[in-house]
Image 1 (cartoon, rainbow, N blue to C red):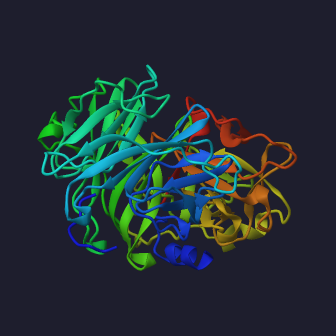
Image 2 (tube, rainbow, N blue to C red; image 1 turned 30 degrees about the horizontal axis):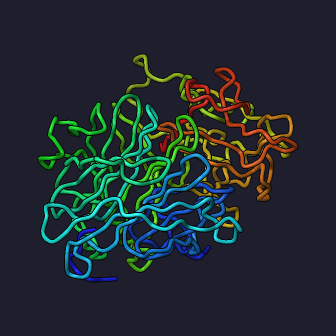
Length: 483
């Protein structure tokens, strides 16, 4: 953590909605240098600089309550077997005026402070820095290699090199005789991940701890070996200052740093970070969760879903989700063919809701997929429902026909209907996840009389239904077009 300047509910959600994109979490998500998010007994946890952390029941609303002894800075966490390994830095990074630092690890059977099994083991030193050597022992990040089960830890700041050491996954101690390897410079708060034969090194670049003036951003390099070299998309070595941008400031949040990856499902991933300053929350440092996309085998931050009115387009063929109502023709017939070329050219007004709503049934309506014609029965307004809670990274939404309260809903027969009135019932609430390829998964919060996790799918070119999500099929994928 590079120090330049020593600076140590519902209302919040509505404030964020007025500005567009929902970038940070709601509740009291105030944290700096958050660890990778961990799930434990149905709750989510992250730890930050200091001794505390945040807890969430649903992944969307976060509040204080996490407990991590030892103080220090920039922890990380990892579940190995049925235990949780927590690592943190003690001093270093210029804290206390020097660069002497230590990295320590400790274990716990649970992250829930109210559990009778909640007890941290004695912290063990696994790395250190002394005097003015070319490294700061601070800002650790963990990787359990899925290919061979080896445990790795990266650490360091701008003051020297980012280093890599190997730990024993059974004890959390440093492997005897292991020597640190230099893998990067010009960054800090690193994290490692593995995907499809590549090791990725995420580093936080820029300045921190200056509120809205912080320039933090997250960059990445990759290697076929965990020990490097880590090169960016232009072939630059991170040991020479390379790094491809993953996420920078935008909207009303600035200074993203301390990357963490959380895999929700196959093809559904999110990244966590902190924002040095959320201007909607008094410029305080807050937890951020965003979709994680993969483009040309490189990670990049997606955009949190933005409320609005959209065509909901099936990736299967490009047809649009629509009410199953009779098609109402617009006035006029074929034009042109050298006839009436002297008559004035006037714009043709778009069909409006008032033009057609009297032709629609008043009760429940079916839903289908058809050619998009920018007609009222194809335009869906999507807004967050603050009181309904949310999921990891986002709230639940209602999906209604523009200008009406007619809402999309799941049925007990695992089908779709459009009900006349949005009531807030669970089957009328929808989860919207951006997938790693940039398309979206749409899921009802509840399917009546069912415990299945079902998603909106195209059973055919014209037939939407609910079925198990399949990342390998375009039937399960949707796009939102703002026409």
